[in-house]
Image (cartoon, rainbow, N blue to C red; front, top):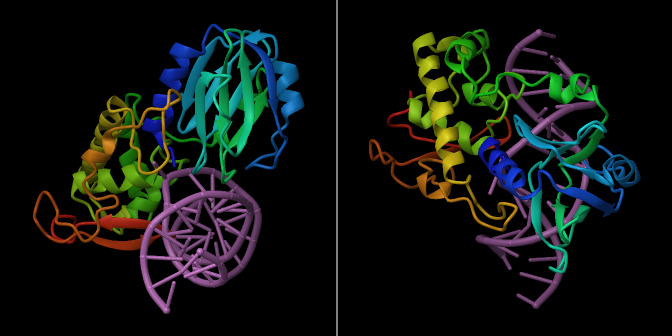
Length: 273
DNA sequence: CCAGTATCCTGCAGGC
DNA sequence: TGCCTGCAGGATACTG
């Protein structure tokens, strides 16, 4: 569910509301998630320590301590991080709770359990396979120069390529569809059959749509909320995602839905080539 | 190495 | 009202 803008919005909320505070307790159940959730291990490493930094890499969050290591979190499809009063009712599927010194709690809620929360010892970050495999950070400088040659070398549909976290880290199904619409490129177009100039345009649109979505607090479709419980407001700016059957804002043609790599894909047959 | 498919899990909407 | 099917913002282990 959450893509880069939603994860970045969560990170900013934690930077303001969590960083600097001490985690006085850790509780939860050691359920199976994308990786096993080991509550006692997290409790031993994080309990009694302060969170010093909240970082993001692609769709991953890293909550650092000064010298004990970091809590790695991925929200998967349905994950949410909530920051609020410990007395508030606890949602179903709350798997991990960080109790804070000021009486509030950070709760990791994830019904589908496609997410993960895992302790990384100092130095583990550079060994974790899913972190080391991550590609370009799209809001960092250089996307326009680095991404086009990678895409041009491949035959797969561009939408599948930009969803591949090893190429560019943070684009998901919503922003893949939106950036291709903005660039006027068909999602099914093979990377190798797209000019480098058009791929550069795509890279620019990826950056632009992600940055705009961050400024709107992300996109809420059904259940994404910020740690404070607010909805992201970028949904009103979506041009294709979830709009099949409606008319294209740019050319008026009827937007069509298809499936690409087992993911719903909406595009405009009139102006995406 | 690359491209495409199946799979993990719960909740919800829609059809009958 | 229920029961069934398919689908959902993701990643990855497979298969050819």
